[in-house]
Length: 249
Image (cartoon, rainbow, N blue to C red; front, side):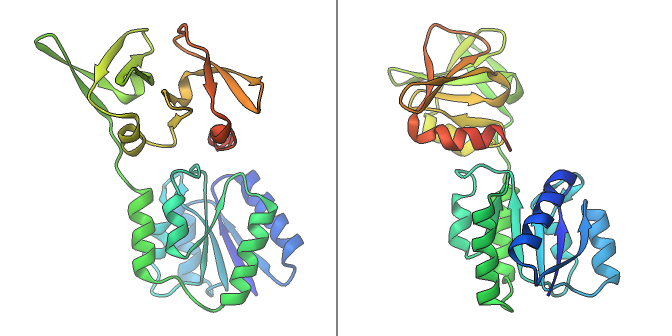
């Protein structure tokens, strides 16, 4: 059987190829592509492989753009750097995925599933469901009323959001804070999960605000954020594993 890898990170592509060679020596990697453009060119002139390993977000677009150009395509195992909270809906679509950095056991399970279900292909409606989730538009700005005036804050200027006795405030990198009319649960839905992560019941933080990370007792993490505040900011134990994956994506 043959496989094609579409992955824009050379190290990740080589590692995936090595793991496939180790776990499934019956699968030959016939191409390692790095972009939508190179993928479109390759699939236009070459014979379809038996399986495609496809990165969802590439430097010049989405992996879905390649699938759109194909009348028929092989079964797809998607790879993504999205954290597990962002892809939890993915599991219900019946599609395989690999969360980067790729875990060897996860890859083994995906390959086993492929061998069992082969030659079943992903249906167009499932691809559309997946596309809508990963191409979702997230919030870019917040309007905040200060007295009789409305101020606009770009998401890129926000370091973190904090809940204090039920009141939610956004904190800017300039050290200013302003109340907003959103709950932390709502913020989790409207903020890009690549850039923001809810670390506990009180904080949703930007990746750019994390200055220092220290081990803390009971398998938790202690953070130093920019701008600093008087709180002891701790990643809850149940969120620590996903927080590490989020930082490493």
